[in-house]
Image (tube, rainbow, N blue to C red; front, side):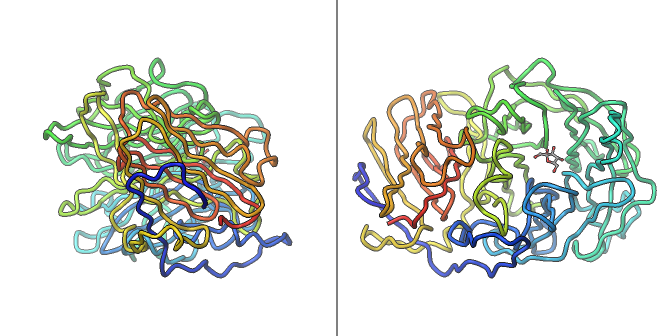
Length: 471
Ligand code: FRU
């Protein structure tokens, strides 16, 4: 990093105590260790996409994920598994769910069955229940439409081993081609399970007493929101704004049709009575305005004393995810973020704030000369109406983060390796819509940048691949 054009109140923090993990090669390819993030989650080797089954239980955050261990491109989907006690350091665990005769294991969610509604556990040792989509590749090849349906599995040993329910599928396919990505949650007001499912261009909402028998209650979204692509990976949860007003937030990922092209996640704010979601307006809102945050969902069962709504997204974009220049592994997750609902002068905002635990890996520094390596965090305070930061290296690769009164932008046109995809070299612009920038927190981690405006009013997440380290 050299010559930031913005010098007002510049504070730098550098990464400490993080070393890249050892890598295992799955294919004969050049080493790509320079791109392996130091403080973002990546699979040890092989292909990863969406975060799945995010759940907290007994002191551990569980991150399951779409995983194909045998290649660095998408294939027969498994659920990979990792756990963390602090959302920062992750321990890799064996694969949790393997494809079976019903199909590949696509995206889904997990929750703790505290009341033992399923009968899979006991109230003393409640089951961790995963609900996921089965995708039958044979049905897909045969050009039927009913090859996606929902199944459940449970674990009685903190997610280490899993038993698939012998009554699967619990929601058969109603003859609809895109029918997937169930997110379950216990509704303590109605004392039943809720389920939100992506169905082509809308979501379906269901209820259940026991996670096995499901009743469809309503549909939402066919005539609202962004529709440039198929709807995927929805989520629905309650948040209280700073005035104590409770609202429900629905996340819906779409691909393509995002603000930078390709994949992105939109959200709706409204009310939910346990069966019907009523949006408060028809505004299209995006969780992240960068090109590389997709399929993000939130953790279940975070303890009430903590109370946070915690989010992780997949840090890539289906436009080029399978051809980015990493080989031993492909894709990282975003840093975990806390989602906060705020009623502001410019309307309701779903703010994304890096989790406080991230602070543990950065040390405070004030001297620009101390920045070393390509993994660090920059904190910039400003009262300027325009400015920016440019990251450089010795061979002239550059990545610029610029703002004026109307837009924040990231320019990765000249950011090293860009030509592996026609759409990768680009300037991404996010409209500020009345947000006045007073600070930027910039998390750089070898091949990604996440820019948080005013600690979360707006976020942009982008990948980049310099040919030499940042200098
Ligand atoms: C989203 C998605 C999901 C699907 C999964 C398959 O990225 O397409 O809809 O369940 O990936 O890996």
